[in-house]
Length: 387
Image (cartoon, rainbow, N blue to C red; front, side):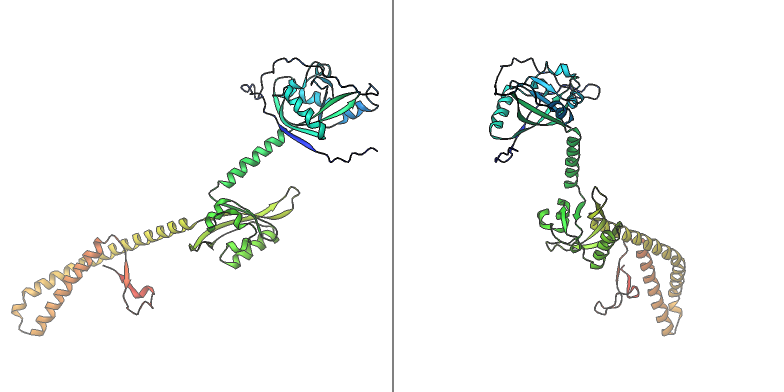
């Protein structure tokens, strides 16, 4: 067996296709390239002029579409796969050139390919191929040279439509994750972070997401019991874990509330290879909920105060009126103690009326400490309404 000491090399060429026309019935089509004149290039090698035994059997068995051309680009042979891909009959291929098949190809492309094949084993093209119905598809094309009497160029064409769609989908999903407002983190089976999006870095106070790579996912959570519970539930029990907990920012900006949803990360074989976490900063939500609770508490207390004032108002009015009439009789009372009791009771009644009026017109519920013990007592019984 003859071996070549040179290492196999490949030249990569990205070919810009012709500008496509408007879509027709769900298919994107392109304008056919103009007819080109070919310059005959003949390279004669000594030896047999017929194809070697088994050549057709090998050609037809190749998975990719195969077009064999002369050095001017004119097609001289094609396999069944090429017929399936490009919709041409075998005889029709013989009237075509590679320029009719590869969108945007011209003589300069053949020159570039030929130069690269002098020193390298293959040339690789990323291009679009044109079918007989003028529709086109993305293709990866490997080109090499073979000796069948004359030197020929062999184009191996692979339809990469599905691959291109998957790549576009992955690119779209990656952009969505990168720009998501919620944090997304991926950890391996040891709970070490392998990927975090920018939202996670912002939440935890890091400048760049790369700073979190390799950090233990449990260190993101302040409550270590919950952190261990998360790892145990997801990586050991293979179950979904959700919780609201607290985390501490790296830049010493304090503690914040976070909602975490963690699930198994599963590969194409259905095996668990780690966990995926969705993280949401719910600090604002918590503050809003607290504000709503405070507002509801204030509303209830103000309504209670209003009801109490309503019930106390009538007897207080009676007491105040009666004490007013008694004070008018003070000049007829000779006992000074009784006179003093009536006067002090009248003053208390007036004070009671003022308090009831303030409580009835209050629009904010506040309390103050009733027992001054240096702030040690904070029980409900130690505070009264501030009026």
